Every structure is written in C-alpha cells, then in structure tokens.
Image 1 (cartoon, rainbow, N blue to C red):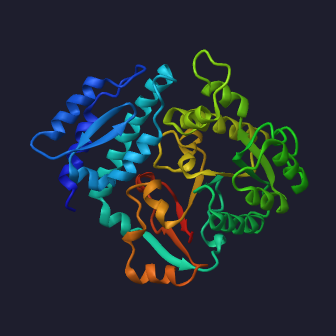
Image 2 (tube, rainbow, N blue to C red):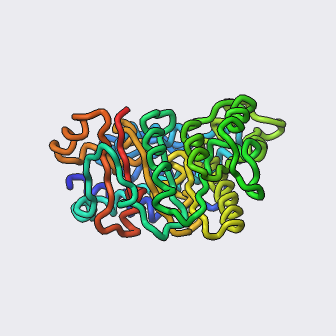
Image 3 (spheres, one colour):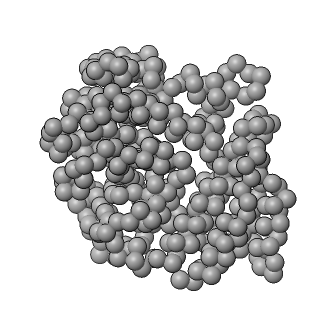
Length: 370
C-alpha cells in the first residue's frame, strides 16, 4: 500500500524512542523526533498532550489526521490545573501513540490477510447463539454513548443470553452505575426496575438506562463499578477539596484517568468473580474501556477468557480505531446495509488471531444505523 514505507519508518522511530518512566515526556526528545520527520517535507502537527509531534502528510493520511488530532487533544490535561497528573498523562498519550503506530505497521504488513479473515454480513435480527463462545468468562459490550439504536441492539443480546447460557448466573456490570447507586456484590444484586428508577432520580440519569432495565427484567444481577467518591478525590486539583464538573469530566476522559478508572473497574470485577467463580459477567461501557486495541483496557488488565463486542454507528468507526473503517466493504454490502434502517452490519473473525484482535480491537463488531 502507498503508505507502507512511511508508516514503517514512523513505527521504527517511535518504537526506538525511550518512553520516559518519569513524570513527563522529554520535550527535547519529541522536538528532535519532529525535526527528523520534517526534513525536506511538508509536515503536519499532531498534538500529544502538551507537546506537538510533527508528521509527514503520508503518515497523517494513514492515521486520519483529524481523528488522531481530536483523539489526543481531547485526552490532554491542563498543566496549570494538574501539574503532576498532566505530565503523567502526557506519558500515557505518548505510549498510546507508540502503540497505535505499532498496530498500523502490522495492519499495513498484513492488510490482505486481516481482511480475508473477516466475515461481514448484513442481518435484520442477529442470532447471538451462533456467534458467542460457550466457555467465555467475560463478555465486554463496548458502545458509542447516547445512541438509541445501539441500546436496542444490546437489549436484543441481553434477551438472548439466558437461553444461550441456561446453567449460569449472569451479571451486568457497568460504568453507568456508580457503586453507591447499586447494591454491593455481597448482596444478591437483583433489584426491581422501580428501585433502579428511584436511584436514578436521586443520583441523576445514566447512559443506557434502558439497557440496565432490560438486564433486570431478564433476571440478571446489576453491578455498578464506578466509585464516584474515589474518582472525585483523584480528579481534584492539588490543594482543592473537589473538582468542578468540567475538571471531573476532563480527568475521567484523559489517558491517565481512563487507566485509573479501568483499574478500578477491574478490581470490582475481580471481587465479583471471587464471590461467584462460575458466573457469566457482562461488562457494559464505552468502547475505549474494552477494546483490545487500547492500552490498559479491561481485557488486558483482567486476562480472563473474554469476548469483546463493539457496537457502533458508521460515522464513529474512525474515532474507535482509525484502522477500522466501514468504507472498506464492497459496494454490494454497503448497499444492503443502507437498504433497511433495521439492518445491522455484522463482522466476525473467520480465523481470529491474538495479534489481529489487538489491531482491530474486537471479536465481533455490530454496526447499526444512527
């Protein structure tokens, strides 16, 4: 492919750099890196935390410049508000760029093989029994927030789970309930839709409320894994008792914040597994928490036999992973998907490998209409 040599060069250079273990990325190292890439070429600036890395246009095309810029810019922390955390966050962002570049090199080298291993079909109603493994420990459901059609499809999955795993207790664990909103794992975790709505009235509505209600109606345990008080304490600027709402959101979505939260989620899931070793655990949250392609994702932290399902809408695919694009499909498949607003594009591996799953992030991808 046309960008092969350029992205391979970028990968070698990035992976050859020593990622600092101290609290900040070496500005001089990044500057030298930018100068090296810029020799004799027109360049683009890609923000990485509080610095910029200069990339040639060919690399920007591979990385989908606007998406990568937004991905890294949205994840930065203001150094004036968070001096220490901002520096640590820059390290996480630099590590993520190294990780992505390594994946891009592998994607380029194995492009034909990767696509030959993916089976893509258009379905009106998905039969999950044919798609899910029998011996899985955790099923991860990664969503794009605030998409009702995604919620509808996840509900369809939840309705099928009791018949797919009739002998197993099923729990839905989710970032959308804080631990102080749901009963603790020491209790039986079953409570009524009315009780859930009561908690929502007290603490405010959560994303995917209808998904949680569907879990309750299908006799699943419901567990919140986000500890609001711990996260508030971690996101408070130095010298402040509590963060503002904006600061809270900035930390929660930063690279350092995502690692912090995923470690917290993983601990809650470990506690649940200890109490019920044979249960099927379904984790429901944002796709960045569960994707194999993300550093410090839940599957990498827990290392339990897992199955990752990504739910998305076409415009969000590039944001999930710049290497994963709806537009790679044949025109006939895209036309079949567009022909019905109830159609879903289903992608699964014919012959999955750990390496390829890490590049594209999932075992199964479901694309629905907006």
